Amino acid sequence: MGTKFTAMAMALLILTVWSTARADENSKFNTWLANLRSEALQSGIRTDIADAALSSIQPLPRVIELDRKQPEFTMTFDEYLGNVVPRSRVIKGLNKLAENRELLTKIGAQYGVQPRFIVAFWGIETDFGRHTGGFSVINALATLAFDGRRSAYFRKELLNALQILNDGHIAPNDMKGSWAGAMGQCQFMPSSFLNFAVDNDGDGRRDI
Image (cartoon, rainbow, N blue to C red; front, top):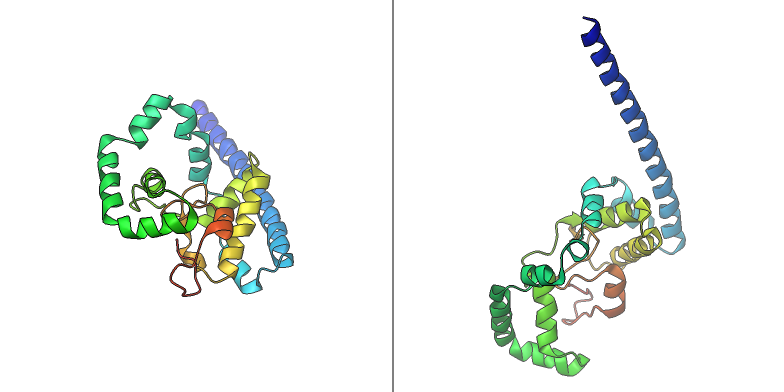
């Protein structure tokens, strides 16, 4: 009986400590988020956009897990190359290059980027659009900005993402991407979007 009681008491103590630590972490995040929201509003982000984007986010443990085990840091070059550029993807890339040659040639001439490089990045980043990411970009960036490993960088990217929403290029709920906040067919970070994305069809939105 004594052993059972001791085990139960220990379990209760551990649960209490864990709950207290979790509550403290949530409190810190909420304070951090309030400061971020104030900064966003001061930079010109509309209140309705800030509310829609930031009102229900919480740190995502899966994002931190993926950040800590990026394949670029855990594989040899040969392993990485074989995983990212298998023969099947090379063949698919050649087919995509042929299928889209007219458009790619036009883009290449306009921007000075060879079509083969565009297709290569497209294939490596998302397997030609098959895997563009399912994370909320805002939530992922907020998690990484709060985490502290590269907080300044990801805080800036989070503010850039809010600017994209503010400009009306996409709705908050539709802004999905990788765990690191990269978006679209070739996985632009928000800063790259703001600097380089183009409204090619003239509809007023830069849709990547």
